[in-house]
Image 1 (cartoon, rainbow, N blue to C red):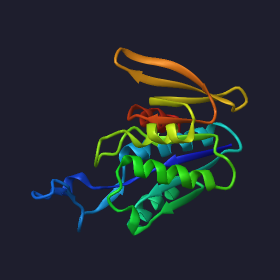
Image 2 (image 1 turned 180 degrees about the horizontal axis):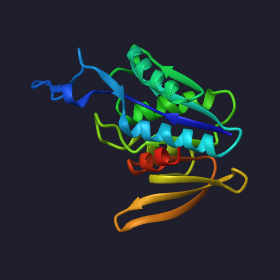
Image 3 (image 1 turned 90 degrees about the vertical axis):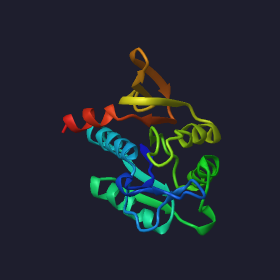
Length: 193
């Protein structure tokens, strides 16, 4: 089984200022980190790898060469492989361009993935759109706001506990599929160590 985890490098939010003319983040000279919600997705992938046998975890990111730092963090955490898509042509990509670029690359990877994990959102844009757009482009089902994931049916399905306004609900879906991971998942994953 292969779990693909999409991650993003984001600016350390304590150091960010806004360009008054363009209204965009000024990233020059600002330290970058692995997006916290992506880190929850990495933890979930590693938790699944610990609980079930024969799972390969692969982190993929689209960004500038400095995004290697985020991927190195994933490898330090225990991810098996990391892929960086870096090209000056990607600079300033919106969520649709990002999802399309990631999807086209994912289609070319050796061996199919069974499960894709993404963080609920990136803290530098808060759009929460790349995951849903990826699932649409790839034609796979998605489950949003997951706090727990369990493989069932001989790893052909997942059972997901997800946050909703009134509490939690349990949803099952056939694989391949995409799951966005919320903050509450980190607590569960760490407590299982």
